[in-house]
Length: 83
Image (cartoon, rainbow, N blue to C red; front, side):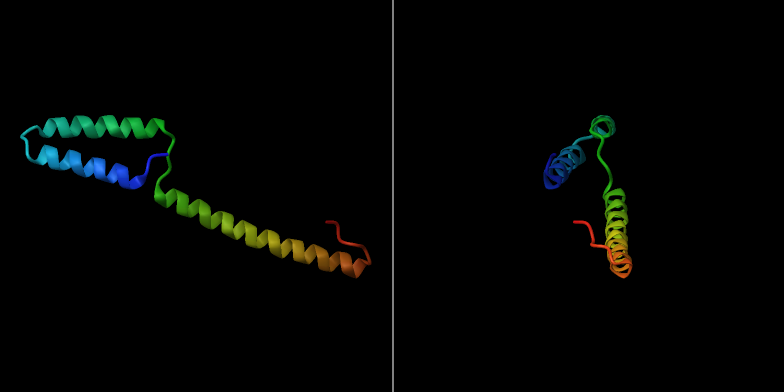
């Protein structure tokens, strides 16, 4: 997976190069080309990643609560908890 700083640097260099030249249509073409290439890489946005990370954290927390509850119920029933 490419380093995000590398991609930012690459975009900044393209922007600086294009700002110095009258070829604005080239910028649009390069941007479209890069957007298409990144779309094929099956990447997610930072926002999507953060949402999924939060969902996973809540699921892990709930799982821990349920495991504790099961252990308590098994103790009350006189059963040994399974490993």
